[in-house]
Length: 367
Ligand code: SF4
Image (cartoon, rainbow, N blue to C red; front, side):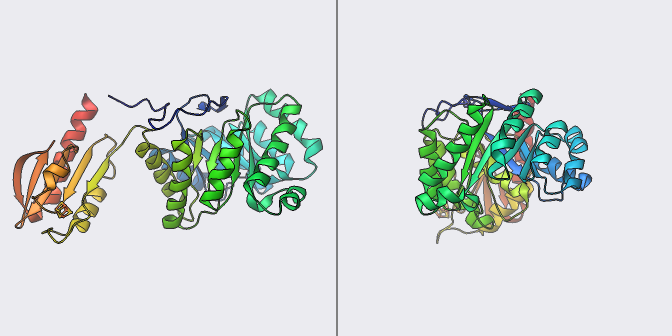
């Protein structure tokens, strides 16, 4: 049967309070959502909407946009109206944009109290405006923009320092009776990230937004995010995630979705199982796996396709797959659920697999 994606198969989820980001619930046992951030100028509404459309297609639940200038703030009403995803405005330094974002109908605003001038005075006003509009906020504490006093007290952006900063800011909101916020405490190092979120998770029931900040280009950033999110989610910590990559945002969403799928926290989509190949393989498994992955990238049905380099272990190793190929002697044995249904010449393997996969996916979608 379908997994219960609101529960982790590895560990009970940490009990957090629930907030709403537009129609998307975050925390309180809600399915873990995937976020990303556009990298187009927000004031370029059509380019930004195009990118949001791509993120939506890839499985993104919530999108964040930067609001560094007045033109960007002015673009928010139209962007919010036309976006298929709830929009979070990301605001640094200028509190007046926070109020404009709330007026524009943004689903949430991310603020970094540490770098909003005069936050002691403006903070309560922000909370009031958010309450009146029925929207949520995110406190984002970053290692790079830590409160100076806290930095000095702890001697750097340690887990304790990041959590102390988050608590200080959380209490500022709570002292004025505002509770609809989530917290992120970001660091670029996966070990520090895990330690920090663990500590924060033990201090209260805020929903937590997981992120490894400045994680690097796609390859390194993916590994760092998988490690940190994997460890935390496996302990039940985390309510919404954002993978940060120095890569097009759609790549962040793909990685985020796959992390959740592989942890049993999101319905599985298309997946490829392929052997690493070895001295026994008689075809170029790497090329074959890539061709099949490319050919099936648009498939949304939860089909598993196996590509195995030899017939010795192929079908047996991939019995869990819906469909697969095991190659040998210039031929490919096409199998379905571990049973060989036909044998085709090597140059027809890819097209046969793609045809069969489409057929099976069509059946799955119809049922
Ligand atoms: Fe080697 Fe065959 Fe296993 Fe692939 S399936 S790794 S080729 S033994």
